Image 1 (cartoon, helix red, strand yellow):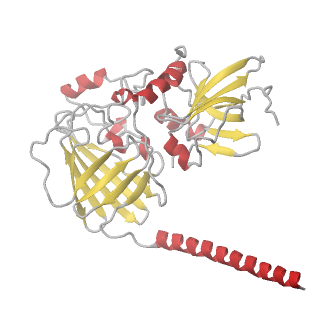
Image 2 (tube, rainbow over the protein chains, first blue to last red; image 1 turned 180 degrees about the vertical axis):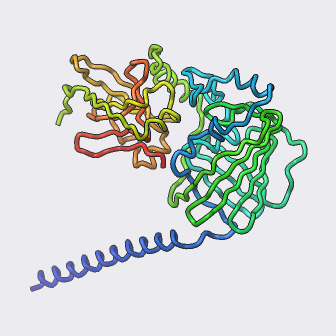
Image 3 (cartoon, each protein chain N blue to C red; image 1 turned 45 degrees about the horizontal axis):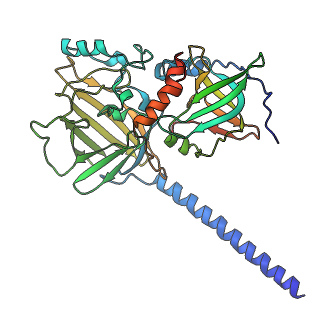
Length: 261
Length: 131
């Protein structure tokens, strides 16, 4: 009799635990669905974002959309031996193969996520690729008149309406390529980006590069779509010489027929 | 159960016509991205490292010779988001890998987001999607 009572109590406890677990899952699912359906927060772009489709693997703009180069840029272009695109060759001279920073805007075009973190005076963009970051100043300051060149440049941002962040940047060095398919730029490059949050989970991303020293017209990138990735934590993907060297010896060189050293 | 070393390389050539042009555009020039193949063998080493994780495995070819294959995949960050850990593949595991092989003919391949996958003998699958 006593045993039966315990058994009944146990059964009751199990039933209660199951009911509770089921309702916890139901609540979590309901919250996720509600979050997804909720309108995007105003003037807030924080979160982890990743391109939809192949947008992150393209160059700044496809070859066909690159405007004519100036002689200055053409001379540099002719020395490039990229690993991707119509000019691809093995054992090329892409600067990132020697762990040079990808720099901006190329850092935007990798198939890895980035995160926006907002503070009252700036938005910080953290990239998984290279574990790199850049501040986008939103406190109303202007771009510096004659900035010293850097890999990431100097960026300011402002909101157009409640859902479009416009970022302008300048002050780049000229050591980086615009993308994996090459294409040079000069220190005069200025970049304008528009992050248009069309719904809670979606950004339409547009980029324009103005660099009259290198190109006879602005470079207009194709519109790309980014998706919010709730729950994703960006990892680290730094370029580390020891890892790159090991990878080159064990994979890159054997792949093109060089003996495995 | 001791994994079978006798499993021969499975050369299933799959033309993925729908993806091929995109692959060719994005891909690493060293690999024949139009012609994915599937190989099976015993893992000798798994390297969990940037820039790309690496799987080394012994594969018996159709002549019965054991060939040491080197396979690159994605970065640890991308594989982590696909559910991998550094212990997902261990030396001694018998696995089947779909990859695009080196154009040079060397036993080197890339198992990436479009065609790549690792299948274990118990049926569980590891993928490399960009996520």
